[in-house]
Image 1 (cartoon, rainbow, N blue to C red):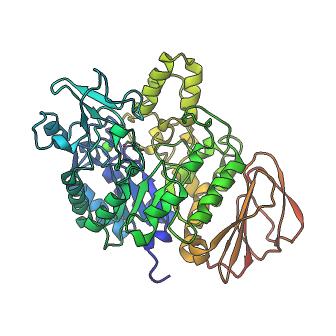
Image 2: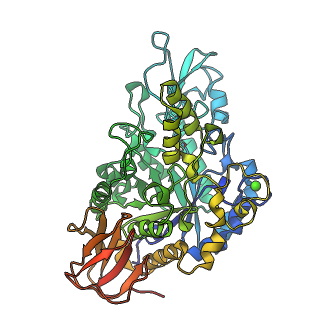
Image 3: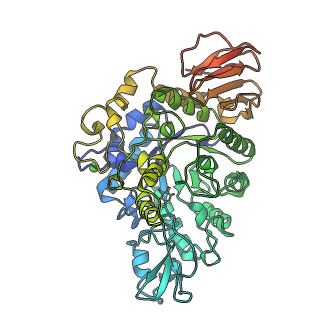
Length: 550
Ligand code: GLC
Ligand code: CA
């Protein structure tokens, strides 16, 4: 594995700094809190942290509205803290991957403050401005956060584009000065020694809004290639694009090394399984294991030899996996481990979102007053006005709302789960009395140690990094089984994704048991011998060769 990039054999841990660890008791997580927890992350075994935005921001969208890319958000600390974090993480063998939010800025960014001064301002063309059409917005484009994507500016009688909140005006990537300014700020961070970039909604930068084109615009890949050449191209940095609209064909374009664009992208096809066809995420539909198998297998195979997959269940925009597709009550431990095992032995770079490794759950609300997230709150009012019942909307929020993943990290059983001694910015889930880091570290059978083991296995075994993926076709509908295969080794991964028992018959006799989420006798699987899988039971056997473990 000589020349293989480091990010292909490591696991990335995502931190939402606002909710991770508060050290000055203002109720908001901070950079010093992350520094304080590096030993914990090292114990887990991860090789990189994707840090959600820590730049100066008015926080309309919790840091995804940046007013200065070369300054740290006051609540999070100082640039000296940031330098210390990068250095301390390095000492722990951990790289810091920055969140690069450059589809839009904050309306408080100096570029936008200039831009809105008038049509003759040199920064006017940094953003997307358009004249009214028949006294209305230029077209019907809508914002992800509800309503029109066009905001009228009285002073100049023009509209500007915001695909998110009006406080997040879209940059105009057709302007080469904009592109150069972005490359400059990226180089600023590269010189500071960061390990890479996660690129926020990057598939929107090639937009042609007046033609109604937002995602996957015609210039997208040319801009990314240009960015690659102007910034990280000759380094070993890891880059991952957030691309809601990627198909496997498009993902290959981004991640084929020969094209010199990105390391990989986040695709979201599987995230659409539990929503109604053609509707949006709030329109709930039941989870389907056959659909999950079909989608993930398609991606595993399509990017098997060209390009690279990212593997994730959670992030700061998605509900907690154990609540979403697992069972966060009687089978919380088993289902959390089942989803971990299923994902982490696939081919690609796995991502863990803070708290996932201890099985943190969603936080249901009763009333919209408890919500913080701008997307959730706007949707609530939009749907209320459209005639939806309050109960129906709250049900959608509890299933899919972004606050679910953003409640503070649960460290121990002390007040506020050890997150802060002050008043936390967002409610702490009361289940911290049972679910917390301290408890999970003390229990050798905990979810944490399943993750730790999976991370170590990937570091030590090339079959997990590079082996081919083969779906086991002949299984019960709710059983997801696959093999990883290379010249020397073959692994069998079997996961029952149901809270009922299912039968499973091994296709071949096995050698050693590697990992399981129920206690199993150490005896091997016998070819053709049927067995009952318990609710959410998951196990991994070696079929050929041997695994390395130390
Ligand atoms: C991405 C981020 C999300 C943010 C949005 C706008 O989807 O992950 O949190 O609200 O972009 O920046
Ligand atoms: Ca703080």
